[in-house]
Image 1 (cartoon, one colour):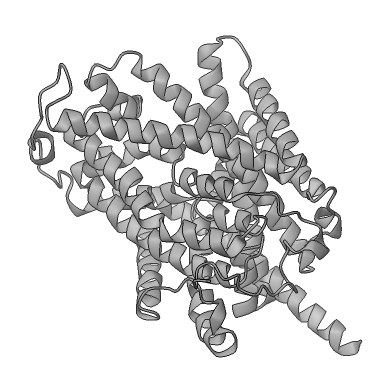
Image 2 (cartoon, rainbow, N blue to C red):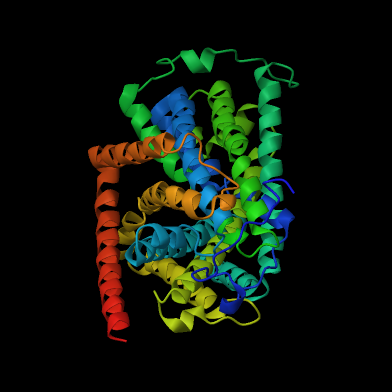
Length: 472
């Protein structure tokens, strides 16, 4: 066997995906491959990137390339650890092994909180599209319907989740590839009814950096958080037929996925459409581009794609939240009731995660000016906190794995430890930039507050359990 096909031994003691903890292994390689592909294509790319383009202009391509490089480093580090020890707790398990139980507790529950709030936000976005198609229908009813459907999907066998994500991801990937194909044809001037724009939109109206370094910084901050979702593949890998091979393949293709889908899309959009076109923000950059090219029914076509992206994210986030909770409970870091499994599925964790997400939706209607805004601010920088734990964990675990079980290193971080330190420096720089910008400073404060509370709680629990084990 080759190094990539030889199954690495898995330490099952703290792996929330092992048979003793009741989770199944029903995901096939095709499921995992499409989850990895679809994980980089979300509503943040289809809609949210418009604000970044408005701030950075054509230099949004540079912003996405910089943040994309950081994400590739993070995914390579996570892939190294997950291929060596697949676990449904993913980075939470790795943080516990490397740093201590308090770190696993902090990383795991902060990510669970992020996913649950995100489920609610995605439900709201999907409901807005549906009410546009069916005027007069209440948004909350659509959200409730979506919650029931995807809660039901996740309560059933894990292969049902895999099938939903497979087809959702296939549609998203197909839409992006088609968009890029149309865009390239228009850029070179062979698309019927269009002329090549050349470099007019890239160098005109303020140049490539129309708002200077400040615009680039805003675009960079916007682009960083658009990459969330890649981590789910390492959670799902633990329930696949061949977790080591699955993680290795997903990580090794991360580079071209990011370059093609994100950086490529931004390059096509700012080449074809003036960056200061108001429709880029109002309609979304993809709709604005297709409208600019005279593609019939562009708005409705992209609404379907965005709806699929939102529903896919809801499905994946309920799955990820339930598996993270199950893994935490398996490591004595959460209420035991959440860790119970039925037919290989952590149904209590699925239900609680779904209910929490729907509660966030209700708060958006009942308390939109205070509690809901607090929720949004609190999750603002959680993904960066998670990435920080990943980098520190990899820095510590790599040496240990090389010493104790070098055969597990079927995926290796490039230029270790230099690029790990580069990634940590990049994250620190982003934290600093968030503190500088008024719009993101409050998010940094609230996320920091949540992280501190979880860390202190985790540390106290670690000390209490340590004393209890000594007394026993």
